[in-house]
Length: 462
Ligand SMILES: Cc1ncc(COP(=O)(O)O)c(C=O)c1O
Image (cartoon, rainbow, N blue to C red):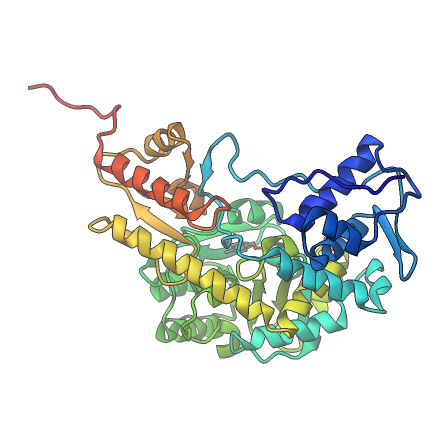
């Protein structure tokens, strides 16, 4: 064939434009199996791009399964069928700005992802990743977890560490491992929205406890431990979801003293801790390693799609967990563990985490500025704000009015562990995938709406 010269969509990175052109020309039949692509230098010259761009484009096409490259022999079209590219993740569904997910802003760059994937490709042991992971995770990932946990001041024996497909599955597995059907589990009354159904599915009954500005109150905990048979406490002590509160050292010690007195096992969900760069009070695991199951994950700090969670069992009590991970399907996927391991071992994890912290700090600053004079909680590092609505607004009607303006937030009632008086709050998350200026615009709309009257409010006519 005459030299193949593609028409490029120059609005995207040029190497992607060339790789996409190979893809579409294979689909369209212009390029067929066995066709040889022009030498990289010739194509670079014809297209007026650098040799590096073409090299990267051919590599990308190779990764998509379109090209086979043999050193010294050139690049050949490998198959008549291109692997269709991943469909773009909708940034805004039907124009709606969705502020309901407690996720980090999407800060990872394509290069950071590529470098991890290339490291996996180059690894001579990569095929081992196609096997089932051991129930508690690959040994290398347990070591990675033990390093990561040191950031939270946790020095755990790898024997006690389990790698799970996210913190949520870690929690489900712990509940399964330590509770009996029908048992009552204590937790803060306003809590992680999935907790209510998680308890239901685990056949445990929730016991909603009173909170103050630091979260669970020792008085409520002591009363529940003394007057009921409940012997398990689930707690999110740092940047609690949704209130953003963090317990002081003193409060943690009081809770631990009560737990020791009444032999209560603590499930500590510490998934948000590292989003705040400041030194935090010690974890419950650090204070009481003999009675704490510590759960965390990389979802909020690196990327939720990795599905990597870590569970640390109380010292030397890993046996019941071990017998349950096998049946709970909580094991993780080796390849995403390798991506995390590459990031953590090369310090890219720090770069990503610092970027996330900066993004959240910037959105938080805008929020605080705009909502000056309103009542809300939004501690440093929190990926959301817990905003109290003025008396004149009904919370569900407020959320509905925002929805009409294409903004989605979560009404406070979603976070109630058991139905009770509905909080006058909404949770507004910062980590959406839409551009920051749109998030700020959404904040402005929310603020403006707060000043307006609830249309359904009864206004007496004099
Ligand atoms: C308190 C809390 N725990 C656990 C999870 C689930 O985390 P993962 O994505 O690691 O399963 C969330 C998610 O928002 C959460 O808010």
